[in-house]
Image (tube, rainbow over all chains, first blue to last red; front, side, top):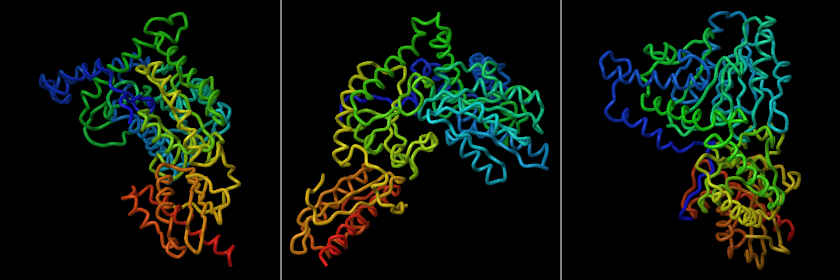
Length: 424
Length: 107
């Protein structure tokens, strides 16, 4: 085991920024009041939540009354999708509700849709192109008169591809003006991976609902938020007290919420100006910095490792994401070999997950199961150094070579493998 | 680990959908497995299973080697997480098939 570990899995989670921890500390110690309490202990907690809500609202360009804090993005996605369906079900029970989503969503959205599907909700899964991008026209064509919700992620968590959310939002707005559907179509986006790097202004994106998470943006785990555009018909899915404008019952996670506010405020400070090219430079060049390291990584791997390919669009991808497939390699053994050298990455191979099917994202993009099993995701973050990337580029080819020796192939054809049943 | 150039028999099992593909090569003399090697495209558990099977089978008679089952492989490895248990089935299957292929050939 290498003495110094290198973390290259920022899409899985990010470390807590020291300044965010500092913001949170008082609320883990002396300021322990329940924000619902009327006394001074409660009021200081409430004030802290209000301030954090302001920060999130400012980042998204909405009013603070449109932000609901949750336990994370999974809960935010559940609230968004089930909350809309529940409300529409109550409004009109005469027809089946239809939802459009993509085939590359995070399980938080996909499984929520699956579970609604079992209850009789109709779901259309839009396949991406082979670059991992969902087409606006494909979404438009899927709209039916019973469509009530469209949920398309902003940036994919596995391949980092950026979806045309703004264009889909505008298209849905136009559809709603035409009033061809029985109900107004609500547009939701899971923006978890996008918050650090893309413009998340909700009016710019033309979204009604947007989910985000604290622990992907150098904030704490166990906290997230859902933006709900004023006037959106939604029903709470967790019953209890009247917290969060009556939409999410449960005592607020005050230190977590404060941390989320601090973390999102840092993004605004460090990188948001960089959306305007003239503002690049100084702290705001974080995105450019990551892009440069990422491109170095991609160019080097494709050049120096034979039978390797980049998964997902090269241009329309997050500045911190690289996702490769290596022929003749199984992702989990690659992951473990890298871990033994101190590098932390991720894979779309089934073996690494708690299931047997490989990445649904890579399969939806048209990769074969073998290619999907051979994938490696490397995601960088603001603490990644060039030295770390250089070290990684030195180790990776050696490990690939070793594993290809074990597998006896630089890429077996699926056809050469007997059609055995999968042992489950 | 690796290929045997002129094996007396070999067997490939697996399914690209599961992600694991395992080939076993055997050399047999007087009914005893004298040489055995593997090539495995698979996760760490599948590679470990392949490796331990070659250790377990070497020097055994064909009949003894056929009795190597998933339970024995897990015991030899000192346990495996539930999600990886199918790797042992894959390994045992490869060994059984390689032996069967040999026996069919020499009938």
